[in-house]
Image: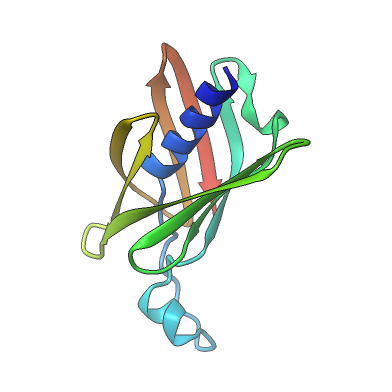
Length: 136
């Protein structure tokens, strides 16, 4: 069951990784002006069926490392930190973000759009609804 739960979280996080809304500040760095979505997104709400997943984890994070790779990191309470790296694509015109992850021999690819630095993952998995909210 623990492997399924980790696989579900990893799949969902990767499948629905999103970008923040673009805001420009005069004091911003060149990186933030050219790729403002390169940042860390933290899960602040996660339910799988009736179960609150955040009660079992210290954190669930997605960090956009550069213009091709992202890192998914999570730590179970009283457990070790786990990190997975995968590729993603971003379309500047549509602000569509797409990532692919391999879990237990299966590959999952999903696209989503983020607004105002927030995105919600909502999908059925193994007959239960999975809902996760991420924000930068």
